[in-house]
Length: 276
Image (cartoon, rainbow, N blue to C red; front, side, top):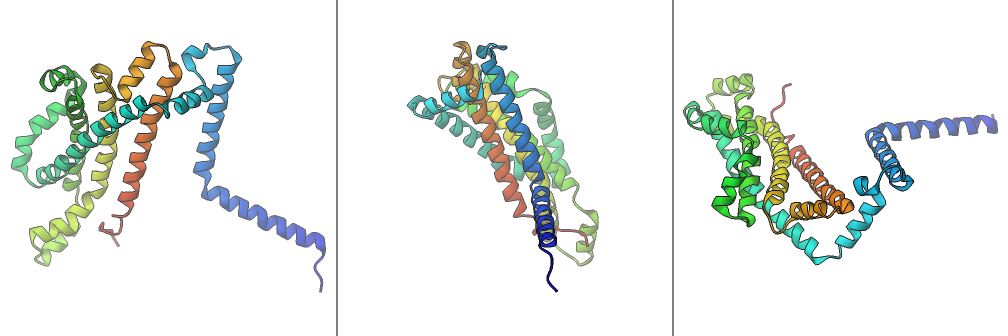
């Protein structure tokens, strides 16, 4: 029996709507977030072009894009990028290399915790920015003073989160392992260390933000190069579009680092112990 054409069209339309609905639900976060971002940019552009607000104060997306295009052809800009990237990589890398093993050790040893805690608690309570004048006196206004600021900004959150991860290891897994006469090294490598992974990556993400903050503050305070220095000079000369572009570069860097850490963290998911 032949199916009427209108019923076929209705069925096809229903399947198509169903497919579109599934596609939307799968990408709902991107659709809503992207739509909101586009709406904000359009409103921002309209305000800049309308004359209701002085462009000197808010610039506009097109002016920021033009400033970025011009800066991308400027050798000094790429030198600033290289300086800021070097400060971030050196400081953040040193913080990572020290904080993770030290956090694991402090979490496993009460005596070491008693030794380290006063210094960690003090640095965590005191804003690292207040130490910047001393750091500049000790290290000068070159790259190493900014590396130290970045290091101090990142090392504490990574260390504290790693230590917390060790302390919150699943006690039931450890009891089962001990009942089978597992060695301390085996318990550490198969239970404590995998269970600490989420805490470590939380510290790394938070530490990355603090490290970028250290780059900006250090270069704003005393520097002759770097993106923070570029932003400070642009602000002093009322180049709002350049300021916004510099902020955009730091924002994109932070999001890229967090995205990369999320991807690395997902690779550890199968390694972590999961309750049945």
